[in-house]
Image (cartoon, rainbow, N blue to C red):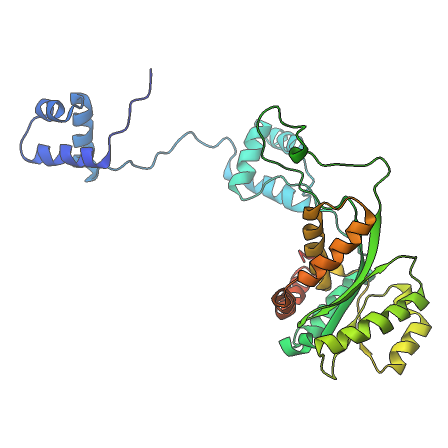
Length: 339
C-alpha cells in the first residue's frame, strides 16, 4: 500500500479549530477533503497531547546494547585498525549477533567513520621529544618574535605534480582530455627549488640545478638569502631558520654563518610541520599544477612567476598564527600535527 501524504500543520490546526466550533468529524472531513478516520485521529491526538505535531517515535530497538557500544568504542580506541569483521566476531563471542553494516552505523552514531590512514614522517622517540621540547620552549614567544624569523628550506616540484583525482563528468566521457590526468612512462622529471620568506613576504627563489653540497648551499645563502634580507627590510635582530640537513650543519656552513653574524634558530629534526614555508610550497605547487607546464624549462618559469604572486598577507598570516602550531605539537605530545 502506498504511503499517504502527511497533512500540513495548517490543515491539522484547521481540523482542531473546526472541532472546537462544534462541527462533526464527517462535516470537517468533507469540508477539508480529508478522510473521517484521519480527522478523528488528529482530534484524539489533540485531546490527549494538546498538540497536533508529530511526536518522537521510539523506532526499532538497537541491536547493540549500550554495553556493547562501549566495548566497540574501547576496541576502536585501543586499535584504530580493527576491522568490522573483528568487531562482529567479538560481539558474537559476547552473545550479540550483528552484521558489518550495523557496526558501521553504530560507529557513525558515535562520530567515528572509516578513513584512509595518512602517511606521515616516521618519528623516533628522540624526534618526538625534540619536537615537544621546541614547542614548550617557544610557546611564550610573541608574534613580534616570529616576525623577525626568516624561514627557508628546499623542495622538489614535479613536472606532472599535484592534480585532482576527482572530476565532474557525464557518462561515457571518462577519456575526454579534461577528465584525464596525463602521465609519462619514465616520470617526466622535476626541479629542486630553494626559497625563503618572512612575515613581510617571499624572498628570493632559485632553482638548484645540480646536487646541492655545502659549498653550493653557502653560495645560495650569499646570493639569495642576504639580498632577501635587504629586500624584506628585516630588523637587525632577525633570526635565520633552516633544518638539520648535513650541508646546513656542516662546520664550514656554521663558520660562514658566524662570520656573517647570522643568528640561527635551533631546530628539531624531522619537523616539517613546524616550518611555515612548507605551507607556501604547497600553495606554489597547487598554482603551478593548474598551469600544466609541458617541460622543465616552462616549469621553472612558472614556479618563479607563481612564487612572486604569493601575497604578503598570506606570509603575514602564516607567521601571525605560528603559535597555533606549537599548541598542536604540545597537544599531540610531540607527534606529527595537521600542519
